[in-house]
Length: 557
Image (cartoon, rainbow, N blue to C red; front, side, top):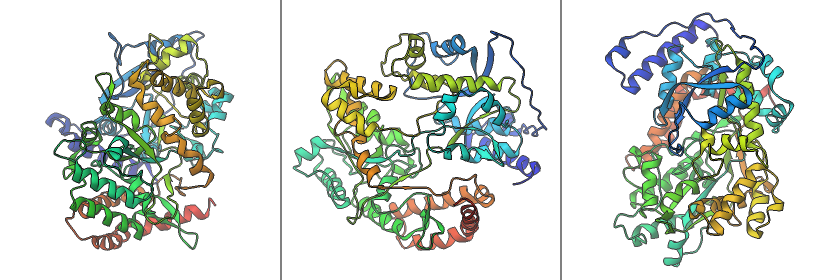
């Protein structure tokens, strides 16, 4: 897709697909998309002390709880940004988390984008080709502070490179620590009840899952062995996913890795995947997996964890923040969980699959009058989120008008959020929490986590049960130092913009992959169908993508 005309066709196609997927009204379906117009930058220089406006779109996260009288339209966070940096935040629309992506597609297709929005990597490329977003090289260079520039290049500048197309900075990476590992979470109270050892191998996992199914320690009458949801292979499935399970069999989800000859190959078609699928199929046959998992989203499947039907799940470091919904009831801890490294199926070290720490980007519309306002928001967020001792005003942005951490996740209201690309939480937090020594803390994040953990440990807030399971001496991140020291992780080798065939065929290939993976897991076809899938994957564009990826790799080694 090298010309704007083709980009326009993509835009029109996305609109038709989005309308179909969202079940729009008849009038909406019949209304044609306006063609992408030749756009020119329309920035204005603000007057001194003038408040400038930045429009965006918002996602109503289920973990965000508003204070009384507040909403997305009017809240203390927006007011504080306007007061501190002179940027008034407005929302063109707000959508539920389950509808946000589809509505964003429609917004892009109708060429009615806000000044600021968060998009996927493929959308970054398409918006660039459609000439709908701004080259922010100069506005970033002039308005980003030195601290901001340093913060976003802690990884050596790799994430910023992924946002650069043809030498132009087209977005701000929604950065996070790439060493974002997955773990195995197990009901330790059930292990004790059934006299089972803690899991050290993948065989232990299978044994525990079968025991939880057959002996029903939760007493529900409808037990399963492991929680799995309908999108288990996506990168953002931080709980009820199966990526970590694959990793235990040395298989990986849509990752570009080197083969013996040093060329890049796609992990989805490697033989180790077949081994992992065979194990999952065996679990399904034994009733260890919810037979309705293919139609349940993460939250629906997680109800089995909250309600004592399941006591084993793979997930990200923040998974305990979701498990707390079942672990704490009526002011009492009623479930006990443990966090463990991903076990291996054969004794060889498990390599935890990681990405580059960025898969989404904040982009600025070419029609934005005040792009410098977006960079102001970026600068302010980095300062606020990384200050060890925030001021009262900064606390408002993090916690709301009462300036107190109460688990309401007010920070989700900030329209532009970037995370630290590197941290030493796994080394610092378990020691600080274990010894109750705050002098060891080095960052604002560590301070916040320590304070939350202490609230649970000293009994002042039982609802903070989840933080010690993340950050405590035996919490999830306590395993990170060993993983990092021994380099027990595998990072995606491809970080370029989607190749031409990838942009055209990737969605089809992933859909085909998920279809055959699900059929194998659910015992609808033989595991040998995986071999046929490999051949189809290659013919449907996989070989062409592989060629393009390796051409890119040869020029970036």
